Image (cartoon, rainbow, N blue to C red; front, side):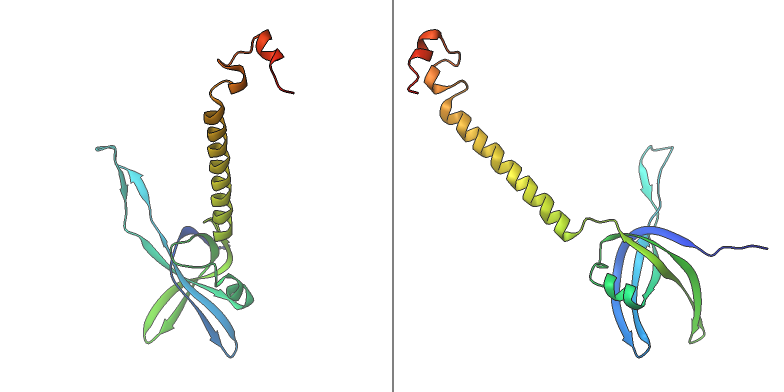
Length: 155
C-alpha cells in the first residue's frame, strides 16, 4: 500500500542553533504554528495554543540558512517527519528539505525605508516649493495669468 511522509508548515522561528560535528553540520531550530478561527457565537477571532515543531536542516544548506533563520522570522518549511529515541524518550522532528523565508529581508526592509524616505523628501520639497510660490505662480499674482502679466515676464 502506498504511503507518503511529507510535512509542510508556515510559522515563526523560535530558537535556532548551528551545531558542528566531525561528520557535518546541523541547523537545529523550532517553528511555531497556530490555528485561528472565528467563533460563530461571539463573531470574534480565537487562537489556539501554539504548536512548536522541532526542525533540522543538514549540511551546507543548514550552514547557508543559519544567518537568516532567526527568532521571529516567518518561514515556509517542507520536509519529512522523523522520530528518534534518546534516553528512553521518543522525539519527533522534521528533517527539512526546503526552507523559504517569507519575512522581508533586512536589505529589502532598508530598501523600502529608503524609498519611503525619498518619497517623503520629494513631497516635502514640493510642499516647500508650492508654499514659496503660492498656490498659483507668484509671478502672475492670483494664479491665473492675464495677457498683461505675460508681457511682464523677465525672460
